[in-house]
Amino acid sequence: MELKFLGTGTSQGVPVIGCHCEVCSSTDPKDNRFRSSALVSTDSGKKILIDCGPDFRIQMLNNKEDNVDAVLLTHEHNDHVIGLDDLRPVIFRSKKNMDLYCNKRVGVEVKNRFPYAFADVKYPGAPSFDLHEIEGNFDLFDTEIIPIEVMHYKISVLGFRFKNLAYITDASFISETEKEKLKNLDYLILNCIRKEDLHPAHFILPQVLELFEELQPKKLYLTHISHHLGLHAETESELPENVHLAFDGLELEF
Image (cartoon, rainbow, N blue to C red):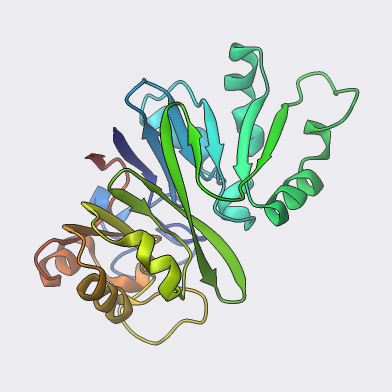
């Protein structure tokens, strides 16, 4: 299997509009970050998209990706769902509804934001979605998916484990029960918004490094990164062994 990072930035992306800090002004392409999303390729050749934010269209074009077979949604914030309408060309080619997997609360929000995708009589050119409520472990394209419930300030967000890789974004707390699902990993992917100053809804670097020591994955990759974390090259050089910054376009085989 393979996971490709389509985006590794926060809700504002990097560079941030109107910001001229050294990160937002950097000429290093690794300092340019679309909103966080990932594409998992299964052993059977199917494509599972994790989150579909406002940069989805250009992410697919830049990575020369043509297809999505199903979508996993971590939560309902706009930087993770507002690109769902751009799945239309994929839906039209497949001639079938797109399967969306999420918890019940997120499904309600998707229906509220994209009511035309669920109408009994569709407007010409509208997308079509089939919602599937996640209530525990499930199989998709011969791949077991283990949902991991984390907290993003006061709302629950889902991370996902595939084999020995786990992907978690927009988290500020992981319970001891859910941490058990994060043992014996080759790759742990965690959000990290900045180096210091506690954030109510996101992990910062010291918290992420503490989790790395506790959970002991073989490798840890940071995502959902803001411009406050610093330049990619400088920050990467400061990290412990086997801890890395993810960047847009990075591929992990597992």
